[in-house]
Length: 89
Image (cartoon, rainbow, N blue to C red; front, side, top):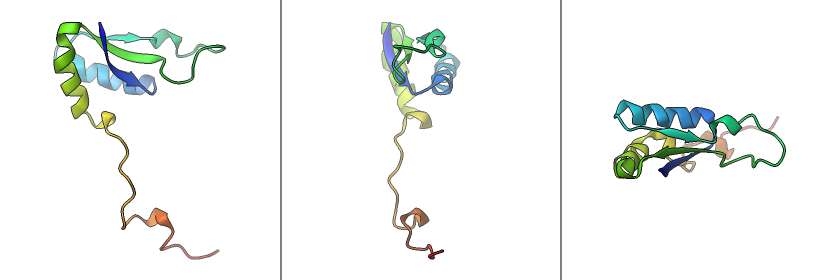
């Protein structure tokens, strides 16, 4: 089996899992039962979405097309978060 997606959390993992299963690709979530663990477990990178080696090319294409696999877009000029439209308190 190959890792097709490193999930940030359990919800992300299940969204990817369901998208792959919808396309009839078998999926295994590695580390799903470790999510509640404490102690020496790392906080991130515990859950991985795995698929059979033969299904990896198709699965990676599906994951790449999911909005969950996109990185956050940088703030644009019209974004009010930059503080240009804010007034002092």
